[in-house]
Amino acid sequence: MAIMTEADKGDFKDKQFAETEVADKVVEQYDEKQARVFYKYVMGGGGFDIHFGCFRSPTDAVYEASKATNERLLTCMDWTFPVTKDSYVLDLGSGHGGISHEVAQRFGCKVMGANISPEQNKMNLAEAAKLGVGDLVDVTLKNF
Image (tube, rainbow, N blue to C red; front, side):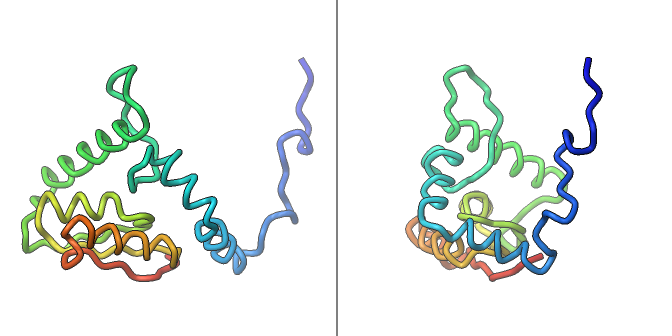
């Protein structure tokens, strides 16, 4: 067996973006049209969640797995600290707003998303309005 050297391990010293450039690179990626399409239809299975999920059955697609993950998250959140219509939920890294929309729909409470991408934020608010929770969901442009 060969011994790995530092070069084999993918040393990125002096090759990474400067800390001040990282946020700009993230926004650049998220705001590209083809990236938004990829995140929505590949990563989110056509939904507004861009994460992988709990695949409960061999026939589950990304969309179903994402919804199963959201259901678990909302249930755990409500068990930990009951969520009511008077609650105000913060969604950090809200992206397209999938979980923000589900929180507003399920609990009837206000949700504030914080997200780095202006284009994703527009998509979030447009979808919230379509779903009838536009008065409950807001988003602020933030790099946290």
